[in-house]
Amino acid sequence: MILNSHGGNDFKTLLRELGAKYPKRWLATCSWFKILDHSTYFEMPGDHADEMETSLMMHLRPDLVRPLSEAGAGHERKSKIEAMQKGWLWAERPWSQISADTGMGDSKAATSGKGRLFFEAVTTKLAAMYLEVCQADMTDLYE
Image (cartoon, rainbow, N blue to C red; front, side, top):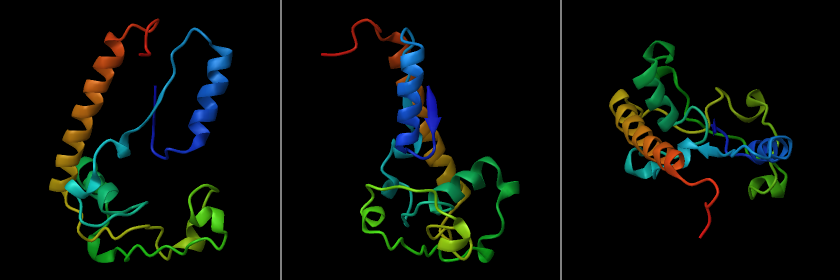
């Protein structure tokens, strides 16, 4: 299973290609960051280096997080291409062109405590999912 952090179709394409090459394997991808409703844990929605990601890093690796007083507001310059604005066209974003500080969301409300609560809840859900997958009859997965 691939635990991806992007949720993009690139992982789905990879799994389809691997599935064709290894048809006896069960392959899946999990967007771990979509498991929970972020508004339960965080005040400000975002995309990259936002309150959620910063809180997780403050909990897991605080030594890698710069002081929040140095963080920008997380303003993102949007694409001029309508399909990208609507989310059905995706392309790699050159961070230096879309943000002054590579953040896509305000991280100023991030705390280690929020990161700990979110991490515990996400890992609990992941553990339950792994158990369910391990206990599933792979020859009879569909209702």
